[in-house]
Length: 157
Image 1 (cartoon, one colour):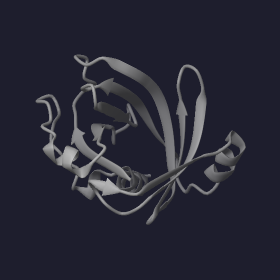
Image 2 (cartoon, rainbow, N blue to C red):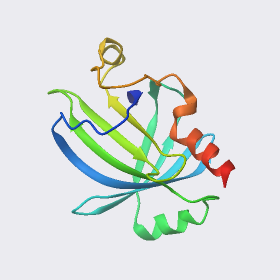
Image 3 (cartoon, rainbow, N blue to C red):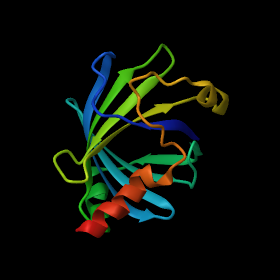
Image 4 (cartoon, helix red, strand yellow):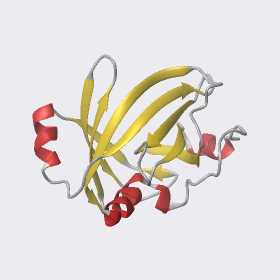
């Protein structure tokens, strides 16, 4: 299970310790149900993942399966539009929590930023008091999900 809250942000939070930085490419084979391929490029390696996500907002079932570059490249052929590119940074928010921040499609007219905090329990998620630098919470607004963004973005092309 994935338990997370999502917030809009205006910039990366320079006041927090940076844990990692990667470039993520992701595309959607299906948006209902969500079937996504993703590559993550860090300074050390490239990871390829096939992901399935259930419907939901705060709580969703997520299954991630590591795949080879060859499989990833083959699955890219099923995409009906270009991949989303995210500058992705993970920060230490507290001893227990990390803040995952994404700048989506930098330089494009559809560019936007968001941050997510993942939790171990629903109770922990509901008790979380977001720091002031986090913007509007959009956890329950499905239009801010990446699959919904994928659909909107590709209607413009």
